[in-house]
Length: 99
Image (cartoon, rainbow, N blue to C red; front, top):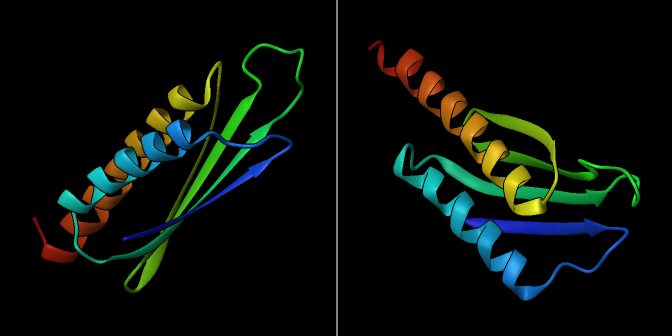
């Protein structure tokens, strides 16, 4: 699965990008219908707490899933987004298979 990462107002480190890739790739175990994913990482207000925002959009066959979370760190926001997307993907799959 292809993951496009866009960082706004900062340069994402290779370490952060590989962390994001690893986390998003875990979603493939729930469905093989994910075509591509897009992630946008932003620093909202540099001095404020919980100022890291991550939004992830999954392009899935016959639709898409989206999650956006704000947290203290990008890693935490990525974890929260992936968790939310996991639930969406599982719910969509269950509706489709009728379980």
